[in-house]
Image (cartoon, rainbow, N blue to C red; front, top):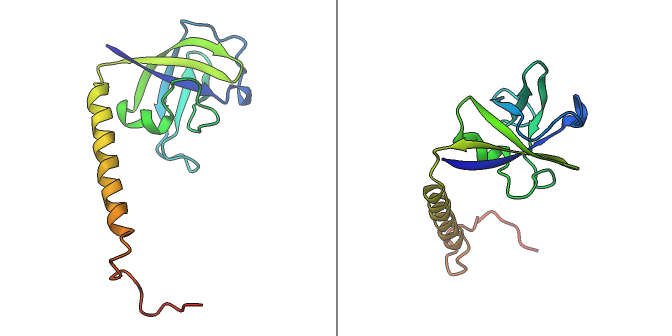
Length: 138
């Protein structure tokens, strides 16, 4: 089993984080109908309901956490997590998974190489076929 870390954020909009302790269980629930973030993952606790969200911004992701966007396709509609640390700017949690990180990193690298090749092709100064003849130059 591997651990994927994530940051629970937004607790100040619900119940705060003073009561949260390492070892507590949290439930992750995808929110595909969320109008603000299509990769939103809400975080719930038994008896309270929603306590926050999985961080999905570089400003709210702590340490080596996955953002909600990176985590979204690696879990089902729901998942169970565990609190590891309560930090001043968020709560660091993890899920246990059989996900193979080496395959994921390799796929990301391959995708980046393909993207980089596409961008290089588009930026070729020798190739003026993409120039629009209706363009006005100043």
